[in-house]
Length: 120
Image 1 (cartoon, rainbow, N blue to C red):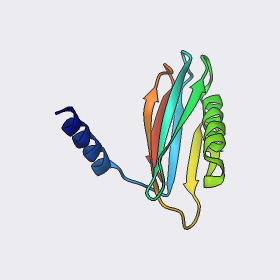
Image 2: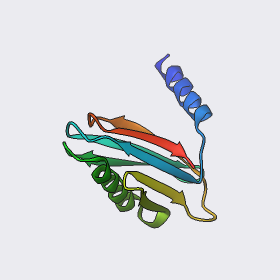
Image 3: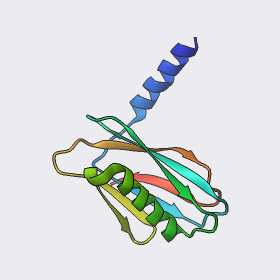
């Protein structure tokens, strides 16, 4: 029964997945506590990658955005174009000819800071 529930959960997650060629990570507010945010990057044709970003207490939104950018670059290398936009947003874009990808947050423990994902 547990296996069938896991399969159903996985299938429903796949059904709502909506890959894109470019994602915007929007960061709002300051971190009220130390914590972590884990991003799950799932390209259509390659293995998924999890990227964990440590967020220190009192980091402002621009600092959090730079931490996210730096950790994504460190983990993903040159697989994607990753840049900070408007100080508090991070853009992730695939290279021409590469597969679209899905982006989700699988864990977020830093209090206060809000992180939202938007397809572009």
